[in-house]
Image (cartoon, rainbow, N blue to C red; front, side):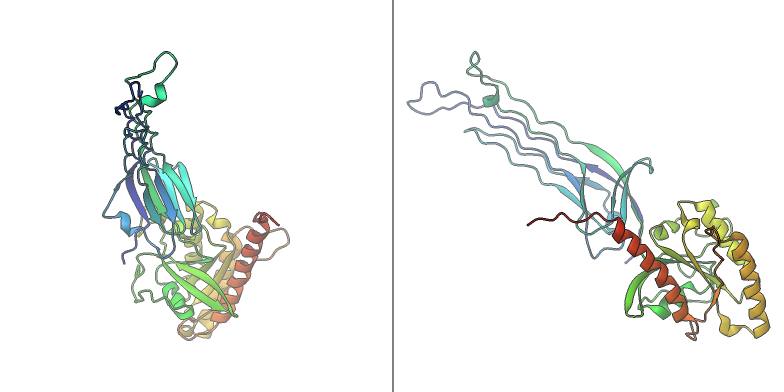
Length: 356
């Protein structure tokens, strides 16, 4: 299935049904009077968060969604039925914006959440509604109200506990494949990963979700390479795992390049907790490994996330995803931050209503 994380669609709610002008015409009833019913309400446009979806590909081939018009009123005081809703089924983590791309309408993060985007028009009154003491036989009825129309932007931000960042060919996809059942494309050339991948990682009998995004290069915030458009998929994570290629020219410069792109992107990514690991150590001799680690330590000290008073920067870890060396240590470091975020979210969640 092709991955699509953004779609622009047009939605319109249903018009209300028209009221009816009708009179009783029954034998032996001389003054039957009006009996026109009201029109039905138009259908709403509703967005619903459902399980089993991880892309917006359904909105690639259909961009117009319209709810049904309410049924018109009928004689014998029969009101029209309500129009059917147009339901937009979206995956977890979908944000709904107005056409400007900045005004947030809704953020659907849990399965079962529903939000009404456009309300259907009210049905018109039938002539029975206008009966009064001085107007016993009204011959007027209201048309239904028009529905609402809107152009909206759906933007998917994957929900994961940890995010993988780094330069192209830093070993992110190899690491994800080694620690989860995900099977991302792996090759020895840059930008092998063209869209985000998710994997469920099992560590110490606990599970968390890790997201791998395409690599960043210098100038990504200006559109170079694949740009920074996929960074939104790690905005919801609790920790970033920053992988630095140990076989590269300069580990410190590689680290600073990615940190610079995170800061240019904003949205709090540069302030997230970070675990840094030097990859491909199985391909390095002892002297080169020592040099790269020292370069990385200096870069972390100068360009890493801001630390609390008295806190020391974390030393970079060393891993080889192919050989399995150091992988467990990295996962435990990431899991510590994931547990901390889960604990904070549990404390901040409102207590459930108690009922006897």
